[in-house]
Image (tube, rainbow, N blue to C red; front, side, top):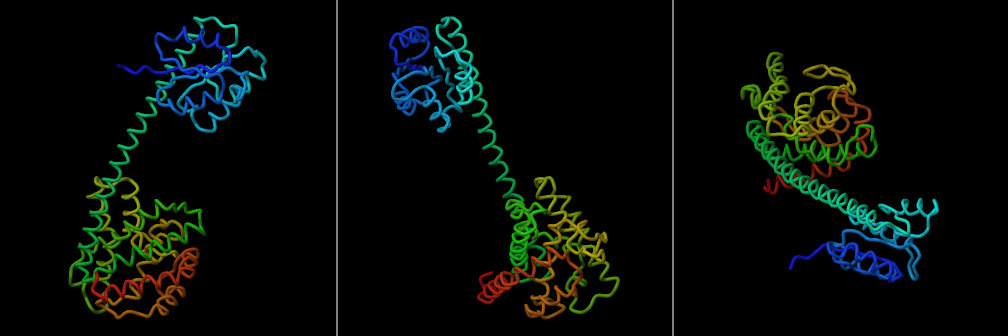
Amino acid sequence: MIRRNKILIVDDIELNRIILAQLFGKEYEILEAENGEEALKLLEQYSKSIVIVLLDLLMPVLDGFETLNHLQNTKILHHIPVILITGDTSNQAEQKGYELGASDIITKPFDSKIVKRRVSNIIELYEHKNNLELLVEQQTRKIQRQSRKLEETNDQIIETLSTVVEFRNLESGMHIRRIKGFTRVLARYMAKHYPEYGLTEEKIKVIVQVSAMHDVGKIAIPDSILLKPGKLTKEERQIMETHTTKGCEIINTISVLQNKEYFGYTYEICRYHHERYDGRGYPDGLRGDEIPIAAQIVSVADVYDALVSDRVYKSAYSKAEAFEMICEGKCGIFSPKLLDCFRNTRKKLEEFADRNTQLQCQGNV
């Protein structure tokens, strides 16, 4: 047996319910209620199959306006239309009905043919509306699934390339982990205290993930320079500095696999993480907030990690020494706002560095 859609008729006068039931009984299953309280119970029970409610205003127990108000609060009116059928022809009653969410108002006495057409039109309109919302919801879920899959692909590419860089750079495997951690700490503080940069949690998540790609261009740097234990010559320094632009060339080759936000932040961080606030950085000599905020944050994270870590060309500084060197501008000039973030997150940065040193000593990485 095919289940028909239902029309709920709510009126305390039985004759009115009979007249309306005869109008729609051949096409719809009719549910009847003598007051708003009974109507709400039927709506709760049959909400998935009721296509419209024909509601009288003057009723005992719970009148039409009270019933409408309840339906509006429970969001039922979003997918089930209500037509008020009333003998009250005042403008006040009409205005209140529409304000409470009625789809239409029909005054008594009414013409049966007109009522049937208006009811049919509203049912059809809501059917299209509900179908459209369902289609949008389905498409949204599909896009979200595709987005998650693309994000997973991006993450795999980033992890693979950053691992290659660490391997070539003779890193222990902790450098990328530390960069991500330092970046997250700094970015979250900046988001909270400097909202003008628009760093949402979702953006921070992407920035942290792609921060691993900051040195991807080092893949193209010769081992004789990359792994040189002593000070680089001027010519060698110039070659080393090309890792920023070479990294961007690498990123451009894989841009088809990345969404716009991933690609944008990856490119900015890779190219500009050696720029300095006073314009004395490289490769483009940007100054101030010409430098994208993501690159500024990763820049501080990278310098801090370089100072507190052993490298082929130096031993690690203490965390206190590293803190003073950055604050005093001995490693280049950083944004005053970023330095404020750095100073106020000092404890968290040091705790994160200590935890990762312990993991490294325990051989967990």
